[in-house]
Image 1 (cartoon, rainbow over the protein chains, first blue to last red):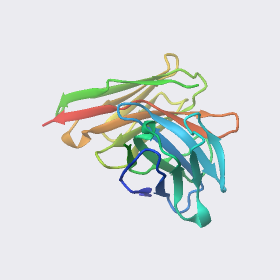
Image 2: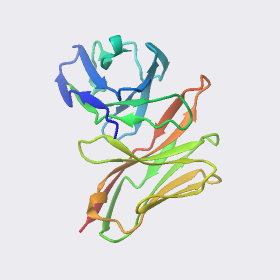
Image 3: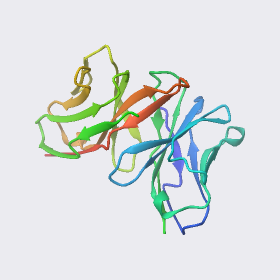
Length: 115
Length: 115
């Protein structure tokens, strides 16, 4: 079936550095999402993105976070600067359309460790 | 906002036994419900999506029950086998005032099926 890829699978960085998480969504999908899951906790919505714009974001989507998808390439989540509390697994998802019943396809996640 | 509680966090059953995972939600306007399975290191895979008008939905080897009155969603695996060992997540879809769909996830259940 359709696959969402995420690169890298693991990333370890020092606090204060910048990190970019990459997502390769399903090719014909138009809506993109990032979720954050701290170990042992719920997966929580960060942001959704359509047509080059952030459509909605949660309060977890701090000012240090940004997303973009330049020229239909990777959908990226950038954190600059990183903080200790950013350590989590970040999941990317994409869906073909907006709508109540639209299934979101998830990537395997990127585990980010901020030291 | 929507609150989703999933229980139990860990579940161990013998091969051939049934396994039941339950989620409760708070928003009575939630319409769409999803169960995902995640094997270690892999993406979330959709098991089933259900619409609120259908209370019983059957898949291959499992049944999803929706009780709108109690705001409860359950996943019943009948005759579990070792290949069912994975993490299971429920998700409840809520439509924001912009019309975009957001998912609210349970914390997950780690299921182990003992041969």
